Amino acid sequence: MTKLGGVNNMPGRGGGAVGGRGGQAAQERVNIRDLPEDVQRAHELLTALSSFDGNGFASLIAAAGVKEPVGALGLKRIAALFESLGMPLTARGIARFKADRGLPTGGGLSSAVAARAYVRALDGNEIVIRLDKGDEVALRPSERALLQFLRRMQEQRGADTLRPVKELLGLNNPPLPAAAEGLENEYVGLAGLRAIEHVTTMRSIPLTPEGWRELIRQLSSEQGAK
Image (cartoon, rainbow, N blue to C red; front, top):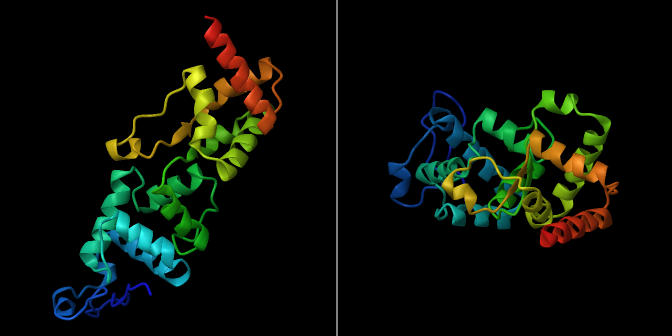
């Protein structure tokens, strides 16, 4: 059974120990609304996971080096973990995280989809599609078709599916925090999307898994011939 409790969400009251046990309870009394925004969101995330995904809860606190019952210090460590990975648990950071992964907006971190996505993100090997709303609105039909194809790839496959094409085209990831490098994610921005669209269009490559493999075969063959 996951243990996350004792955090009072009502203003003007002392609150209880955040998962406090024994003597710790008297030392760690806290009102969640008195904590920084990212720590509050860490509490929201763990509360959601404790309700419907005990394994995800356990994975997350293990990754952060936190033990049950989770206290205020543990929540801070979880917030710091995501901050170090370039995924800050702030309103702006959560909106960016969801947009990058094509997740539904709104709902904070209380939904099963959002909470599980944060646990999944700790494993890495994700395809991250980073487009601003204005960029997406301005896409040409062929670019939009490629975006939809990459979104399906993002849902069904890992970064290792995208990586060969990016490497063969010389497309790099944006600058990332050192900890995030270890996740081995692959990012696609507007420039990368357009570069891939150009090569698939010029070669009449169908936007299918078979077409993707053919693109890798052609690019690899040409590079080997140089």
